[in-house]
Length: 327
Image 1 (tube, one colour):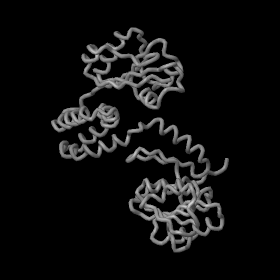
Image 2 (cartoon, rainbow, N blue to C red):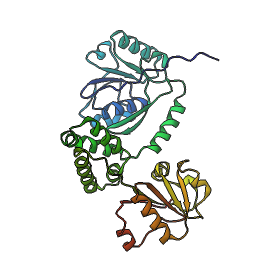
Image 3 (tube, rainbow, N blue to C red):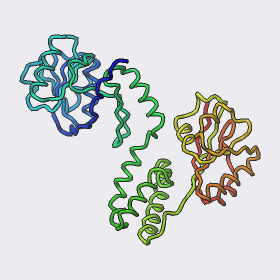
Image 4 (cartoon, rainbow, N blue to C red):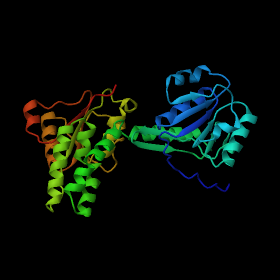
């Protein structure tokens, strides 16, 4: 077996207001520039001419075209260098100068000239995930990226921002470090996160206040269940939304119609308890009872999501998330 090389060391750079040199004006150069601009950098573009892939970047006051091709002095004052040209001699020259100056440099499609590798990025700002194959198989890194994107809510950044907002409140309200740790352990997977991700901010704020009060008084966190109602549409598992798949992987108990396809049921968490109930009134009562006991409950129905009547729904104190039917 071939000996494996040591993996690259993963690191996240602070590029806020830093100068980044981008050499080239093709589509790869454009993507590199866009990536560092999202990180707050200022781009110096070295290229003999402005080609269509980078034209739109000229509208940004954070992008400066040097008006000519690369010159050695262009790396001065830069924190990072990105190269994307088809000129092998130029690529080698820029890489050599950057590395001699101690600057991280990436040369597109030339691993040997790189001192760092561009990962596949999952952006849920301020949460960021970076996936790399060490340059050996970028296509596999992209597949992993797709899998990670499907597992992470698109609005996870909202949850991170909310955590930052309530952190001072938690720190001042809970003096015991162990109790604070219990709060944050419960925060990400508990009902507070569910409220935030569903946009129910008033409910989230109220629950944060209640939880802080309980922990500051030396009490334990009250266990609150969750209910998600999922419609499985035509029964084709390939048409389930990413949101539905995430919920199916996190539920403790799954109540479902007998007509929900086995292919869909197999996508649920393997250790989740399964209960079959075709009577929707009976199923809703059971779902509500289980959630009231602190369980995370999924109710799967064939076709559109089941809709309990308003009286029954009002009698259940648990917040409900409804996911539209798959295609």
